Image (cartoon, rainbow, N blue to C red; front, side, top):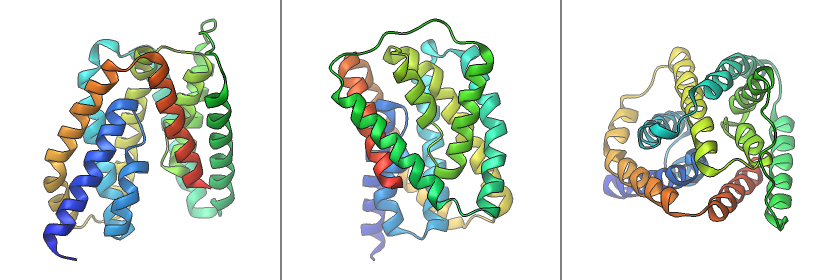
Length: 242
């Protein structure tokens, strides 16, 4: 494949993933990976997606800094940091194919059901800290197995009927922390090809343009459109795991 064609495909993939992630807060790899995993081998595509996703999350955190709920996010992060190493251990010692497929079915069924519900639920009473940390643990564990750390916290927020700014302010730092932790583990277990850094440099303009447009779209859509967008992305992510 010609280099210019590869560069264009990488830019398109990164722009699309960054836009969706800027709008919804997650799903960069689900969108960008549909192209990148066909252009590169997994050992090149996965580190590139992780690095780009961290860049998108950093942009999101800066753009939404006034909405960040640090106390709740830190509880999620603490739980997630416990869950990720367990997932890594399972990946090395267990066939996780059925686990991934089962989780994908659950996510897809939940998203499909919630898309068909005629009304939104309202936020319930405050949840205790141990429960928030447990949600983070589940997100870290599942994220380590499926590369979807934000799925469980996002579903939890949706079930509680959180407004879009509150949801993003809680889940966004968690996703960013899980991705930084994951890429640190990846770097510790393998040597990255220098080509990954070249591809990352090529994709930076598309990454920041997509992120900026996605954040602008997030601020302009109403609660209903945002919620349906999140549920559609959860549905597609679940189907991809199946």
